[in-house]
Image (cartoon, rainbow over all chains, first blue to last red; front, top):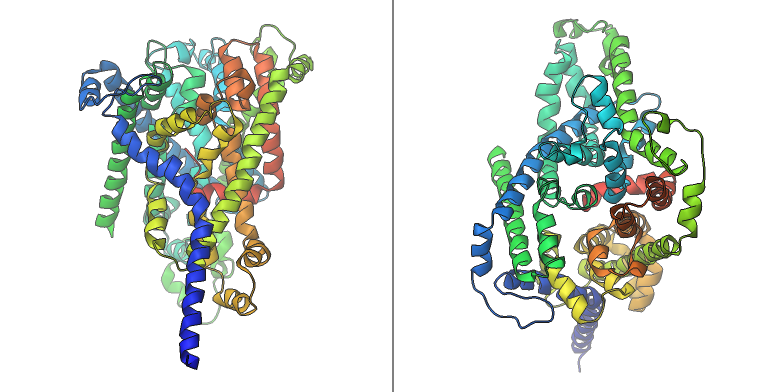
Length: 298
Length: 299
């Protein structure tokens, strides 16, 4: 064997060794993904076309689950409630995020403390938030006392079919605004100070500086937030489970709650999977809309 | 606001620097009135943000009985009755243990597995690498709820309901963790890895003594994120840990709440669940904010 032949052979064996090591290091994660992500993702689609339930024969039911979904008034109601909830929660939490980001944008004494306070709800579990807010919205609780004090009807919002969703929206805003605030704050700090200073010297007022300098710089971050918040809103579950159980009179019954209900109370895994598929399509549509509008902007 | 109206043309004057140029940063700061408005708004926002925490703590320190507004919000009389009940209840201690096991084991396992895979994806050549990596990433797009039911069926058929491994195993398939690890390791200088290669370091030693120390920053950030996610997780523990003994703090407290346990007891339990997160937040706030913004908090 020539010297270069040895070099080639050893390089080849090195390459083989590298491939072996690479595969070995990826293997555990790959197996986990096959069992709990790839497999279930495919199975989740397949299950929607069966009548799968634990401990019984499974058979293909074709489009029965989808047909049932279309004929199910509760599904439409859950879908509508989820959309209304999202239409309220997404803009409100983004507005709150934006307002708070602008408030803590410049440094002043104590600004770090305020930022820490506003981020605290983000690290709090939704179950704890749900438990405390159940009391806050209860009959005679702080919220109804506050409303009573300013002369508004002081009933419990959680037992009012029209007000239960706004109550859940308030909790969502409380738990989410700190996240958006942080995302926007990072973008705000990237805006070159010279831009605003120049506008200032040109006599631009605060509103004009915000409208023509700050807002355009924030647009991509706001889009990003809108998509994340919409996805989070579509998947609302913990607070519904803890605070309302979908009630009163199913007026806060939303999609993931219906999925849970169908799967783990009625053990109708097939129908629950069909609802999961509907959620998937909704998320996909939102992502697609974002792609298209962002593409147009560019 | 002062001296803001100087026309731009005046600045073009050579020589003297106009005052607002010398202290441009000041100029963007709000004036006295602006600062006062900001202070009031911040104070109000802080009160609204903190009120639920205050209520949780104060009400958990109330003796059992009816809660009357607004008297109950005063920090007296205090009683540790609810805590005595909660901490002597075997179930709450068990739920705390379960939550610790669920969170800590998951953090260690995710960090280990994701860093191994991320290292391989960033630095090794092997067949199928690109396809594998991008299909992992594609899974970030598939909502949790689509895979929830099949994952439960897998665990349930394998006898994993009401076990720790059934609780933990599916959550280890964390695409975001693999992605972040790969990006981080890719950004490290090539020379480091080449030098170690030439030294004839064994692959395992290279991972332990070189890769792990280098990725410490991302380990901390990701670790905090995974911990937070598991500590606060609800839906998965709700369906897998069905027996009273296998509940976590979140599902256990939700069940207490649903069974109409006295509010002070449920809130004392909530404080118990919140204190570890709060302490960690005080110490390592940077890692929390980084972890949550980097991964886009789990919804």
